[in-house]
Every structure is written in structure tokens, then in C-alpha cells.
Length: 311
Image 1: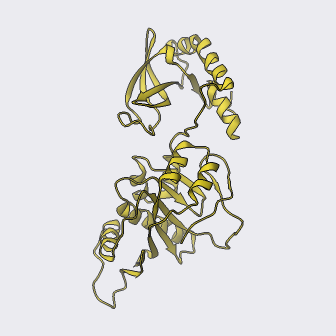
Image 2 (image 1 turned 60 degrees about the vertical axis):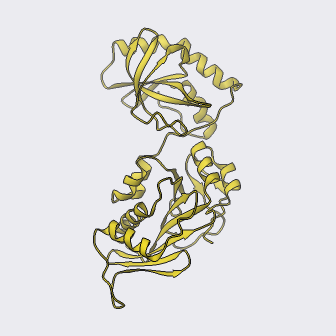
Image 3 (image 1 turned 180 degrees about the horizontal axis):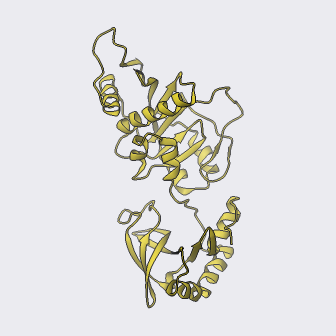
């Protein structure tokens, strides 16, 4: 079983490997899924053909093929390189132990929920160009093998865990999956108690100083961007998310949702939303890399060991 025991969590989305350090890192893309797909050789062959855009030749002397080497493992040989495909019907991680170390709710939920995994390992890729091209092919193959409801993607080499987003399949297909996955990472979700005194004080400060945001928005300086954070609910689920503000209409704030929701199904990043200023949780003005506001950001960043916002 290809399970990793993780010893520490270093920052948001960064996993510290266990004490054993290999001379060569495991270059692989791992997809955490709710259940095994029980893949067979024909399914892996079709997925590979879709990924590379051509049919694999038939015959025992073929130089390109996808064959089952043992239950749940398939050797894929292409002109782009060699790969090992896994379809494992057990967790990749020691789920409870790893989840307890993760600060992001999306990551914790994915690790706890996964019961199986699919992976594409790079075999024999040594030069930088080979590795880059190998990851490109591995990403495309994994995109074709992925079910409709993946939970997260993991890179053993980079020790990074990315929650699955609507954009993740396209990131796998894009030609530079590690870079594209990093670029599309979701905003970190941190659970905060209603009785958290430090956060309550930060929210109170944001509301007291809201007039500063409004004044700047009415007469915006060049190159400034404006965002406000508020709660959005669906059933019993509530998430606090950032909104790129486009209009302030009396006591109402309008704009585009800046985060990809985790549990809310009716909204997505870019959705047009509107909230009352009484529900304001925080505000943020950015101009030339400098920030004003962001009171809850400061509190959460300090707890997570992140750098303070440049002022």
C-alpha cells in the first residue's frame, strides 16, 4: 500500500514528509476519491488514448501500451515516457492523524472523506525537460481517470495537498499541472468559534472603520481594488467569503464572490451577491501591493504563521 505517514504541517497546504527521505522524490499525481473505480485494462487504455490524443497500437510487439501488472496497478508505456497507474481501494493517508494536523477545513474534510485513491507515477524521467513533460502527460491521464466527485489532489514530490475545485480537471489538462494547481488554490477555510474574543474584536474594528472603506470607494485612488467579507448561508451551512465590491447602495454592498465556496452549492466564485452592511465581517483595500483594513486577516494570519499584510 502506497500510504505516507505525515509528521508535520508546514504552513497552509504544505505537508511535511515523515522521517524517511528518499534520494529521488516520488514524482506522482495522487487523486483522493470517495471510492475505488475498480479500473480494468480497457478503461486505462481508453483514458490514456484520450489523454494523448491517439490510439495505442495493438499487438505484442507494440512500443506503446497500457497493461495490468497486478490488481489495481497498470504499466503505461508511451513515447512521452513510462508511467505506473494505481487504483487503490484503501486510504492513501492515515486519515485521522493527518487531518488533525491540517489547518484548512477543505483539506481536513477531503482527507477524512477519502476511502481510495488513483495515482499516476512518473517512471525514469530524469532531466528537467523529461520531468516537466512527464507531469504534463500524467496530469492529462489522471484527468481522464478522475471520477465525477474527486476530493483532493496530492503531490508527494512537492508535499502539497490541493482541494478539488471546479477548475482542477482543466489544471490537470493544461500542460503544467503543478503550477496550474498552485495558481488555482482555494482560499483557506479556518473554523472560528463564535466566542473567539480576538476575532470578535477584529470584526468590531472593521465595522467601526467601514466609513473609511466607503469614502475610498466613492473616490478611488488609481490602481486600488476593494473587497469586503460577509457570511453566506445555505441550509445549516455558513461560510464567510470575500466579495470584490462593485457597488455600495445605501446599507447594501454588491459585488462578485471572490472565493470558491466549500459547502454552499448555489454559489460559485464570480457569482453576483449582495449583503447588508450589518453583516460585514471585514474589509480590505489593496493598492500597489499595500493593504488597508484586513483586521480578521491579521488575526488568522498570525495564528497560522503567515506574513503580515504589507501596509
